[in-house]
Image 1: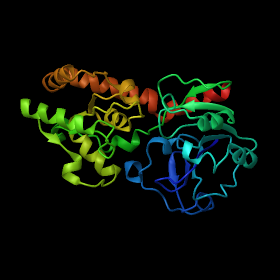
Image 2: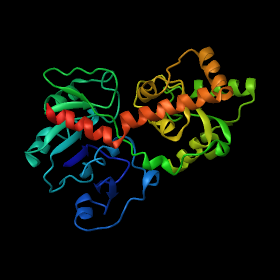
Image 3: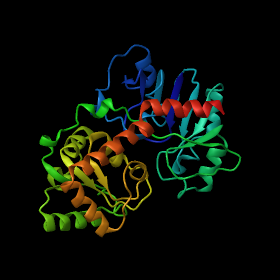
Image 4: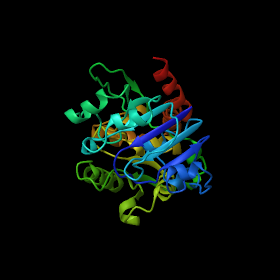
Length: 319
C-alpha cells in the first residue's frame, strides 16, 4: 500500500520516501525514489518523530512538505493523510490534491492544536472537503457529515531500543520535563514543584534547559531522559504529549500534565500533594515503579506501534 503524508507550510525536516519503515531522502522526495541512496540515520538520530512517522509503517510511504515540493510527487497513492492547518487554508487546497491524485482516499488530519479546542471555520471547511477525518487525540471529535476515526502518531520501538538504560545507568532521580519555550505550557510551575520536591527529599534533578541550553537534538534529549527514573511535567494543555510517549518507551515514569498521551499511558494526577505522594512511592516501592512502567510500555505498543497504525488504517479503509 502506498501511503503519503502531505503537510502544507514549512516543516522542520526534509521530505522523504520510505520502504519497510526505513526513510530515504535525496533532498526532494522523487529524487530519493529514483535511486538516490542518501539515507536518514536510523532511529532517533534521524529526527523523525510524532506526525512525520505516519507514512513509515506501510509498504511504501512518503512524507511531502508541500511548501518545498509544490509540484508534489508523480506517484499513485492509495491513501493520503492531508494536513492543512488554519494559517495555510488560503494558499493550499484539497482540490489540488484530489486533481493530482484522483484515486487516493484523502484523510483530513491534524498536526498542531487539539481540534476539539481549536476549530475555526477554515479548518471545518478543509475537513469537509476530505473523504473522511482522522484524529490522533483521545477525546471525541464530531464533524458534520464526516466519519471521524482514530489514528495516533506511530512510533517504532526500534527507535528507542538501543537507548533504554538499566537501573544502574539511571544517574538522576527526576527529569524536569515540559515545554520551556511556551509560557502557557506550565514549565515555570513544573520547575517550582520539582525544586521543592528535591529540597524536601534530596532527589537529584536533571534540568535539561539549564545544563545544555539550546536543544542539542532528539538523540541527546532521549539519552538524557533515559538516565532518569521519573519525568515530571505539569503542562495544562491538552496537546499530543510526545514526552509521555518517549517516557513509556524508555521505561521512565511520567507524572502530571494534561497531555493526551499522558492520559493514555500513565495515571492522571493533578493535585500536587497527591503527585508528591506518587513520586515518593515510585522511589521507595520498586515493585510499584516497575509495574507502572510495564503498564505504560504495554500501552505504548498497543496504541503507538507500527502494527497498531496498520490496524487503524485497515479499520478506516473498511468503512
